[in-house]
Image 1 (cartoon, rainbow, N blue to C red):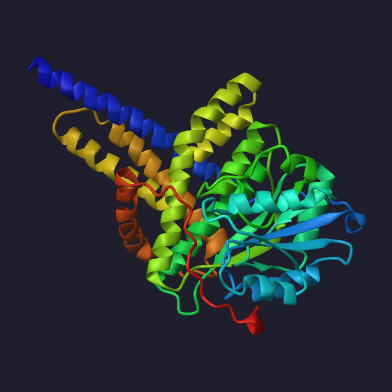
Image 2 (tube, rainbow, N blue to C red; image 1 turned 180 degrees about the vertical axis):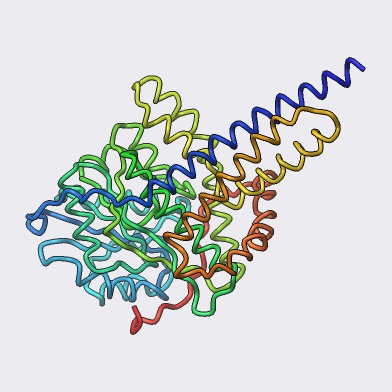
Length: 407
């Protein structure tokens, strides 16, 4: 009997701690979504940005299907005195030739042992060192840069001296499935809603990989050369810890494309999700330690924010804890964990509804929200794979050809 009571007590403690942790994370998510409802302050700008030295770096690995469309939108944003540099990284296709024909300066890198966007960007920065710019803008080769984005990013980087992240969203394929709609909405919640909320609260955002600008002294204070599969998130956290807090710019828009093929979509999500979880495990202790050492509360909030897993995984974890808590409650254990989890679930549902009502209803009809369980089921094997064989190496996502006449 004593052993049975001890086991129940241990289970109650574990469930209570887990339920309280989920309550805090869901509350933070709700606060971010609610804060995003309020308008952001007018960003500080710099009117003489066109006279400053600016370089735009575009890392590209076998991007012949998409880079022409990307450069077609990007070239008009580049002033005559600025530089547009494409890093053709380990390319075996016509990426370099297409980029040169579009008017970009092309540098080529061949090193099959060191693959990944981090290595390509570091190579590009080294190329610029002989005549460094004041600001460097990073743009992926497979995205659409909207008019005015480069100007907004550059002006804010000059005016604040901080890393700047624009709004990076995903466009659905030409023939979208309900799963694509949910995926695009989840991306919007992460990169627009939560980033807007953090900015409204005066906190740092994460870096999303494209549509980013950095003062030269800031970007050269860290080493980008790595094969990390989410090098953008790692870069943002390294800069934040070093005192260079990334800042959100809601007026600079960049759009990527969700893959049409199921296998490519799964590969892309696996890289993103596994990279996020791996970064969570590695950087939360670093952020907490730096928060104590530097006496910075914002780093503590960044650690908490990083602990919020992707929405689908958060729902899965909450459901599992709630199921076990209810089962234990009916077997005579405390109902405290179930009560905490019920509150957490209410916060989570409210956050999702607020984000949808303000930012997602035009692209995602209410009925499509019913497909969220299917989306979650699709991603369960992905999370189990992380427990068994997490993805460590950078893998390029297969592209769909982009029609330049529609870009």
